[in-house]
Amino acid sequence: MEQKTKEQKLSPMRYIRNNKRRVSVLIVSLCLCLTIIYVANFLIMSTDATARKLFIGPMERMCAIGLSYENLGITDEDLNEENLPKLKEKMNQKHIEYAKKLDSAENVVKAIPYAPANVNIKPPIAMLGYNIPLIEPEYADALLEHMGAKLIEGRLPEKPNEIVLDKASMLNNGFVVGGKKGEKYTITGILDCDLYFGYGIRSEQRYVGLYILTDKRVDDAEKYFEVLGLKFEKDYDYVEDYSFWMDEYDKYIKSQLVDATKYIYTGIFVILFISLFVVYTTYLRDRHNEWCLYCSIGYSRKSIYFSIMGELLFTFITAIVIGLIITGAMVFSLDMIMMKPKGISCQYFYPDKIAEILCAFVLFFGMLQIPIRYALYKIRTIDAMEDDMY
Image (cartoon, rainbow, N blue to C red):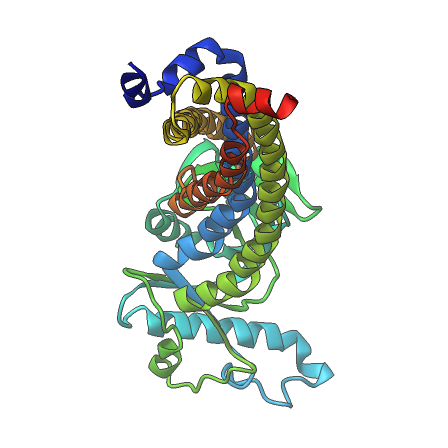
């Protein structure tokens, strides 16, 4: 009879069924840990998603170049005070000439002389900005078609200093059709576009560069200087292509967010796991007498250990499944309630972050072996406890 009792296995589900409240507390705690960490990542990295859409997205369809005075044929004589009124006209004519020359270049759909107007985008962290091109009206149709933008409200710009913006930019800045962007520009309409995008009609501004629409991604826009018969001077000319913005994004946005979030996530992990470790250690202490009783009626420490492992695995797996469901619902709700109404881009699925959280849970599971082993070491039979009393 004694041998038969020793061979029996303790069922972890029996304890779980009889102690639903205590098990539920641990499950909820682990769920919250997973949800808090992932949602914090979602909110912080919405700045990353917005930046990628803002700076890198357009470079799949266009690039831009800016020309120095030397490459525009501007001499010291042109910079004399008496010649300044003619300087802008000369620079503008040179941009128009170069634009026509680039129209026949490799991968170029259309080259457009432009002046910039800045539009700010405010994600949850930091502030970003991009330039919309101020152009001549005859370029508008080609620009809209190439960038995949369609008018959904209001009208397209017709007069100088009139601009049109995509819906996300409008929402993010609280702009309305007919309203003003700053004191200078009037917003005439809203565009539907998968990018942060807009354009306007140039007034008296001089052109600062060429907005080049391309049929594929361009990584080396410097080649267009060769097409124009010019030499690219890094200190005076500039290019904005896919490679340029990827470097800028990695250096000033991605690396900064990674460094900042590293410490935030570490802090969250440490605080939550210390709290859970203390709670679980207390939970083990409360079960000491129960395990002493099991040991007294013939169950081995091995059976008790596997029972504890079964309970712990059930708790962790249930917490992860429920936590992922709650996290998915939270992320979707935040997007609908906070992100989309503010024109902020976001990404739902971060597999690397899920992997990090699961690895942290595995680490925590391993750390709990220390108090569990210690609790098993302290188990004594009732007979041994009575012997110590007398």
